[in-house]
Image (cartoon, rainbow, N blue to C red):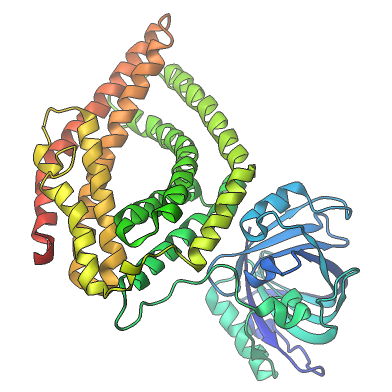
Length: 511
């Protein structure tokens, strides 16, 4: 569930205005519906969750009293996940959900927040919920055993979006402001209750712009910080699966591991090998686990799309179901492996290493040199390997139109590394690097389609061979494999023109 709110500061004597003028024709306002809410918030002793914009609470009287709220990157918009459970201990699932924030540190009660809430529900003509307007009188106290909470009382109004569009929320906003409310910074109640300690900087250093005259180390540091965030931001969404509403979470987290590994390799001359190499090894491990889950996701999606590519020549539905069942079994196993990995001490240690990398990458003295002097040489090396065939696999010049799939896949990996390197240095080397990165991405995407089709063809064939007594399955798998090989041939035929467009974008310093 995604929670979307607007928050308003109001004086103690504020009177909530009539909200009916904001409603569409036939709408109504239900309420007031007063209720008293008592919530206990849990965190580490140094408030790692609160400082990262995360909350974990137990609220008395709720059907599912335990709730985690996670930031989405947009003010006032959070993922909200609730679970049942006794007051005795934080549910294991929710404690695991915030692993990247607490990193194994104990969770304990840190704040007790009591709220007297007056609720107005705005409904349309059919009774559908458009929004809730809540008028909260809040009192916070120190939780038992905690000394970090500031005792205080305050009042605020929140508008929580239901099925309303932004125009209705704007009309409510105008009514509230006219009545004396003022838009407020989105600060959760427990953060106000916890005082200045909860507003200190989070453990992750947010990426920023490089200085006007950056060193190579400045650019590398920003690349690493962005890589770390790509990985950690998707951890909770991978754990939640379909409930998070992000079917691409596994792919995005996997891409994060690959991209950071690629940056560590490209910028290796500027990094302490004793620091970078172990981190790259652990990223390889995590990427491999995520890759197993992602690959079977792709195959299950591709099975139906490939089967339906020629509606005139339908494939046997029962055989397709048997193929899908085999993939589903693989997917369940892969999901279990991901879950086990994310629960492991090894992963918690990796998260700690990523946080440390974000705060202080292991740079060498060479990173102090001006970025414009050092970075072109570092990008030139993977570019020459790709474009001129200076590497072990020969790059693009060695591609054979009828060569093995593995050769084409190697070029795809080289293209990906070049693209990542160009995107990392583009803030310093300019628009030319960014344009070339986009052109290389086009080639990489085409080679990715080639790889997906090649792997799928091998998979359909292997599944049929595993059931030699099922001739219908064998025929169906063979027809699927032929359609995939046709995709491979199309990608190979299209690649030269796509690559020529990329080469035209290269800059002089890459030659």
